[in-house]
Image (cartoon, rainbow, N blue to C red):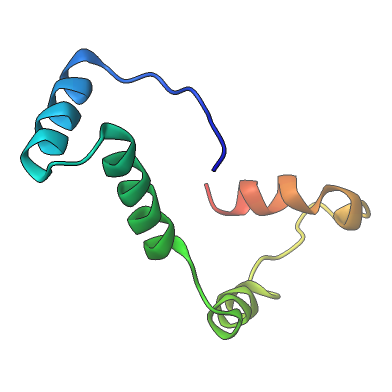
Length: 82
């Protein structure tokens, strides 16, 4: 395992400590399980990712005739989702 340092608010820490005590595990274990659940919720299989990407292909007009799409695609995609 890798070691890292994170900061919690006082309320978050108290809630984590109480939950860990009730379950009889460490705060670290509660945090690891919580992170894993969150990551599982956010993960998608390749088919889902390709499907989501294909939904936006061609969906946005290039009204400004930009010729730097390849080099600035992340900025343009961020702008499109705002």
